[in-house]
Image 1 (cartoon, rainbow, N blue to C red):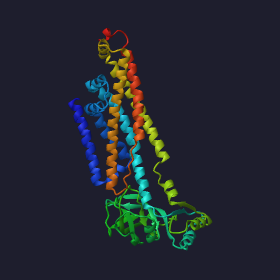
Image 2 (cartoon, rainbow, N blue to C red; image 1 turned 45 degrees about the vertical axis):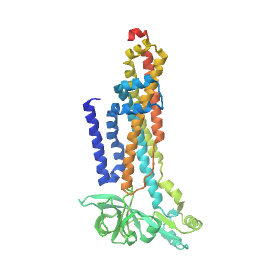
Image 3 (cartoon, one colour; image 1 turned 90 degrees about the vertical axis):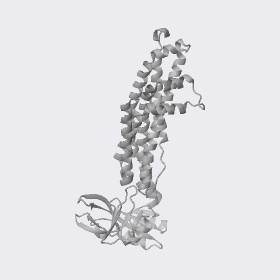
Length: 425
């Protein structure tokens, strides 16, 4: 392995480590954005691919240790041609790491958001008001014994940052802060959400790390600019926290959700039906609004991954064909030493399979490193840390690479062993 290749790999590794460390210290949520977890791992994957010849040696020794007892020729051929081994392992590494990160990273974020939603939703039933309106339905629900009712409405607003930039935010108007705290387990970092009033706001720490009592400028739905006091600060989590205001600061907002806790389910369902509203249990609402597996996301990832794997398969097939064809003299010497043509083909197939396993292990290591940094970011942000390991994607990609590389290498070996062995040597 040349010094230039080693320096380039170390530079990429240093850049990856610096970017990840800066995000974990400054803004952990940055690692949870789609563009970040799609593009940033490329630094690590590229560095690992450059270091493949150097990393292949210890892995080959591990995979061909005494417990495995592979044919000595297979082990010697793989260890004796590390440049060839690295050239074949690199496309496998790229394919495996791409599959693992493209599947595992968004699945980790989706699972964390789903777990966060489950932890925060305390309401037993969630209603979506119909055309009849929500006021009469809310009044009827509050008349039920033991019922805690929290109506809320979506409202567009913007938070004005210190440099004067107005950043759009998801807002929710709540008329009863005490009921909100009962039906929603807010991730409170400081302050009291029940203290929300017409002159205050609840928002997450991501908005400039505010403190309780600070004044925050907001732009309401009708364009009115107001300066509201911070009543409570929420932990950032996965970044899905709305900005809570009262109905006075949400002009034109209509109730689109009613959370109910402590009331008989049958009575709530009957009232919802009477007022033309849709009622869902907590489990059904979470499955519909915060799914861990989003079919649209899966289709999008599959389309991108299929294209990447196609190009990787072409590169792997070309590498297997060319590197095996160049070994014509080596095969001739093996045949002169007594190896049959069939044994040479088995040697090439076994060696290619071994090198494919090395590339798959390196790609798996890059994937697990990426997912570990995301788990650290989730922990730093105060969000749930789910254990998402895309073993199916990793194993499927490794199998696909083996199905491409082994036949191509065997075909090239078959052509390279044509004719008399003495002529090839």
